Length: 291
Image 1 (spheres, helix red, strand yellow):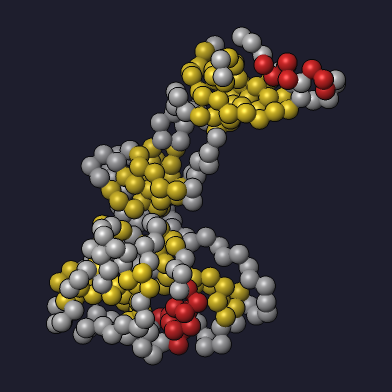
Image 2 (image 1 turned 180 degrees about the vertical axis):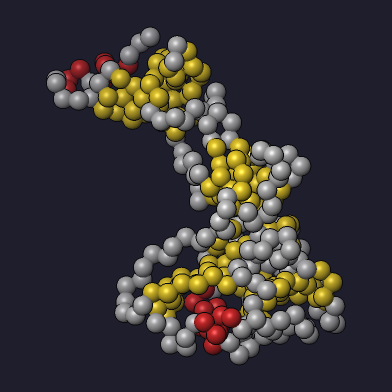
């Protein structure tokens, strides 16, 4: 084995020689990890208990003549299931969306699950707690910081020209209005004088197609007639907790209630979101404010 690191640091005397580089994991032999860097193969100690897959890019920390292997990317320990298939699930994590197998019974959409990344990534199983949005970064200013999560009490879609709530999925289409309903819990909880710190919307997709859905607030606390919408914004959020570009306007309108009691879809492409039955967190709003 050629130790290229030694040649690079001959001029540093007795000072510790430290360098962080990337390589390709090539396997295990005699209890050490083998990593290829350039034309050389290095024997590395295990920096953590993580075992990469062969061919994966890894980081190698070299201190003097000792090499230690570490992951080259974030490996979140938990995620929220977005979609479930016969053999694979798609999980939204703080580091992105990943598709991987699972153990035992398939977890349900919206479940918070544990993830194992070593050797072959897989979902361990559902955790005993529900998904929680990220804590907001405190916003400078006076008042007490408060937070609440408002789950939709109902979901669905109706024809635009007649009252026909024909599906529980909020849909954005040429002939369809989609909606999430929250009762009056938002206006009943947030005081009129509150100022916004953060607002996040939980997006649980079933289909993305054509143009972005057009999000708007609507006037119904519960599923009843054809909803009346305010101004819309074309927005194609990612999966899971997302901050809408119109968060400030939504906060001001929702805390006041009146003609703004829920979130809806005023056409836009052919997009479908999960019903409440498919994912109880579909359309949930996590709001933090000062008052």
